[in-house]
Length: 389
Ligand code: HEM
Image (tube, rainbow, N blue to C red; front, side, top):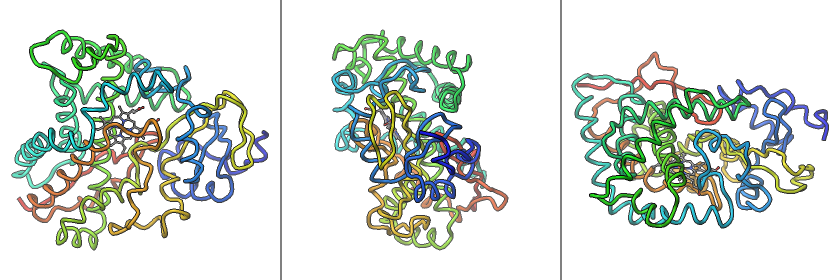
């Protein structure tokens, strides 16, 4: 491989991917669907079929590598293991996160938390929907679901902001930031404290009975909390951004509440909260005519795959009636398909439905640019909105 073979990839800069990646990703998808990106020191996959191929073949494209960014910050977990070890780490959590069980067990919790947050915001006539609603909702729900005790959702949210920054820093090629390691030590302490109290069974105590070791429970709990907070905050904020940013669609969805679930799938297609996932080649392999070498970093751009015109017609259009919106890869694909997908969907559907119902005239603040940003985790920095109090 020489960089001359990948002229587009050679010119990609990380800031472009973090700010507005869609134009460059569209060009890469056509000209260099498997491209070498010197700025990341790895390959970037932008076509949907190739993304699926990579994600469903862990024997060739594994997460199990010491360079994997999340495991550098929080240790080995289901997210950073493949094969039998992956199955052992994931199994204790598969049952509680099964879609039917999530719907039956957690819908009331999500509704109550949503209602409480909306009631607190409502008299003000305006708020930052990300920090005052999406973040607290996601944090409160996952803290309860995981069974963390004696810790406020605000503290956990603050730790996770720091951990997400550290993971993004490693993905961008840097070392683990000291603040990230310290934030993880707070998570560790909170998990251990909750594990030591057996009076109420929780996801954590169940995992302990399933014979995961303490460090293994802590890392997996950290992943659950991470997905439950960082990406779910992004999913809710991005859904709100897309819906409120498109007045015609907003009117349609206000009249047709049954369109909310598909509108949310469509917003995830347009702007997945986790934009890139990393794999490492376990052997020399050819992909779309490109020779990849054993050990190479192979990143899948979920953002690019989700706008592949071979799967989604008119892919840059936000179309809440799109029949195949759910084919997006925002929750990944294959053995690492997001364990929390149903919980995140439940939260976002309830959140959006009730925001529209209970905050009359809900709209974006006219001064709000609010475009999602971020190399790995993408969401608006802030989402100022107004309504008629
Ligand atoms: C309640 C909320 C959530 C929880 C508890 C959660 C939890 C998890 C867990 C435990 C995994 C690892 C699965 C495995 O490796 O076997 C995972 C994977 C993943 N999750 Fe989530 N998640 C949540 C929400 C989200 C959201 C909102 C998104 C994006 C919109 C998302 C995107 C992903 C992706 C892309 C992966 C795969 C990563 C990879 O393959 O490298 N998750 N999630």
